[in-house]
Image (tube, rainbow, N blue to C red; front, side, top):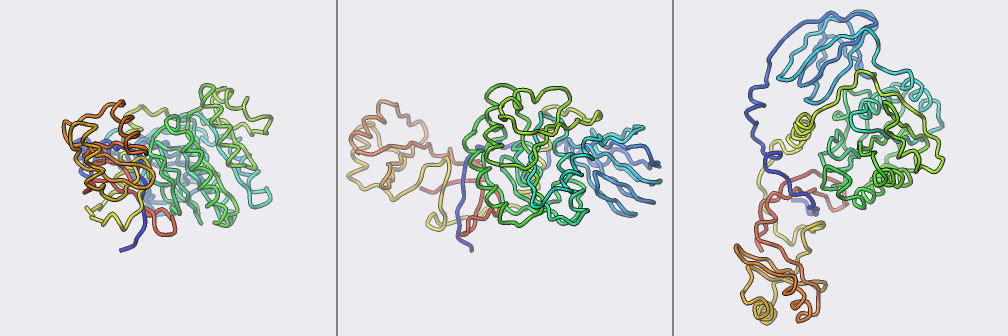
Length: 418
């Protein structure tokens, strides 16, 4: 059994992390099966959940070529724009909520082509960051740029810092991936590493996100890629969001900044970039805004992908190193020290242990402790006091790391036997 450690930050909702399908998912298997003849000059917009199989001809999704008998899955909450140079016969299976729509023109804006050419022609290595609001097309743009670069033979790295809708790595993480050939979507990228932030929104953990970006950037530099593409979250409104994006850009140190927007939703962000040159990118006119339910379902499916086949494992506490929101553990407190705690509190806690930095008090059911009591304890014990209620650890999302610090996966903490 490999030794390592895990970080724990996020109290995961039980519904999101249940490994059993919900009733809605059970009923969303195959609702409709149709064949479509797609012609050159038209685009088929497929909203997931859906599967697309090429029966004849060739098709293209954001630079990824689908050959006869090839099949791709369009996840719930995602849209795949499918084109062809000549003709292609497609078989499309739609799940509940999936849809197909045909439009006359290409959905790839000219500015996307220009951005791809600029990246391809740039001296390597080149680092690119994509900024944009919610549902502006950032992920599709990153996929398109990565595929175009890969088609030219470039080694491509992807950093996905869109915490709530991550495609590279589990939700609530900053993921680092790479692709060696075009992909239908970024979930197909090889996940090299990830950093657990523990929240689906950066506004709740700004410093943690920035620290995670710094660490992942350093790891990306060791990948020896030609093109590094950084996707970001959609929080762009207001002074706090703008300052956060400025700090994110300062850490990323990109050679090219791409700002994708429908109108001027990036105005607050662009004002803070201190004159840095930004290439303005058009949002596709066919981008579909996802409601909160679609975004939640996409996140839930991502959790399932990483927790599929999960088993309950028990590890001796001496085998792991805890970091994060759970207080650092130590050794069981002596009878003398427990007596001091009991005298101040008026009851004996469920468990007490301490290390050179603090005393950890674990409260049992119906046990309460006031701020005043904590202050008295710190004076009596001459060290900081941390408080945890037994059971609070259950359901905490953890990231697992090896001895070398490399991300191994995620898990859900069930219990700590203090």
